[in-house]
Image (tube, rainbow, N blue to C red; front, side, top):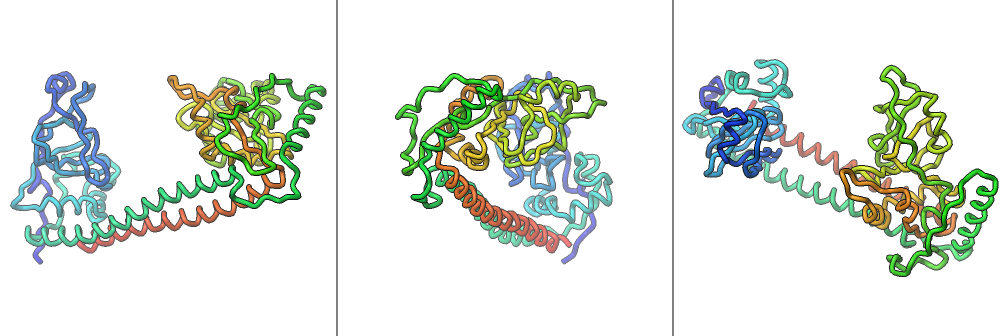
Length: 436
């Protein structure tokens, strides 16, 4: 097989039609919104632009200068011309010199990435414009050989794609499995009941007496009682010995912290946790604002997290995401995070977090979110979230079982992620073999 060293510009020609924003807005042409990593072009109707645009015609090879190595390139097949931002490039190609399917596979290969690094500098992450792209020298076989290579890659890629679809399907099933575990837990179906356990009604009476004592001692504030849970608010029948209650009844306090203003950039005393710091299951304060010690001390009693507190996002798109705090540092919360302090040791924080993460909890959270500029879940709505309450011992058994099953899910997820990586490595190995 004879391979020739040629410049990409010998078989590709950049379409150089450019339009300033005011001119582009008069053309009434569709617009390329994106090219996804499967090589599909997504086109939207004309919309005004404030940036310069390029012209794309039917049959052009369109390349994303930023994501070409991930597969963001395709041939535009629609009859009507389109526009694209200057982050794309559009090329006519010589069908007598290059098979376009061969070229698309080549541009996704590490062989091509290495050529860019060696000849253009800056690496593939640098936006690949025509002035750097077209002068690149590559080794190109004859046209018949290109077609044969592309056909073989397509055959292997189809099998790898089937494996990827299976992995994606299994990933979806795993998400459903996790949610099923949580829902079975809060319906009392995950662990057997123990007839020796006390009824949850007795537990709730002791919690009520403990709260009255704390109110008398001035340690917590008296709250207006919430109305009893109506029959139509009960989504399912609980096991014998369980009771429906709400977050207010089983918590020392529920607060959204202080709207503290971050300190000057040179003052880094007390981390200020916000919604971005509350991750799924843990608190991440590696990147955060800070407040001064003086500001923090003003609201210690109200919003300083303690061991086993639950932090839950209550403003924005991630409302309902939560974690249980373990061995907390000194942190002040702002209003985008709710602090829920369960009545310990009667109510296990991990059990309450299971309820809140389950479909039962999430449906109540999002069913009570106020939709405005940003979704917002107010404290009075958090207090009213209905909780299926078993006795303390059963809470502990449920938490242990959920942990065990979630660990198994984590193992499955690790295997799925490895399978995805193996598929990607296999595809790159095929491309390496084809273009070496």
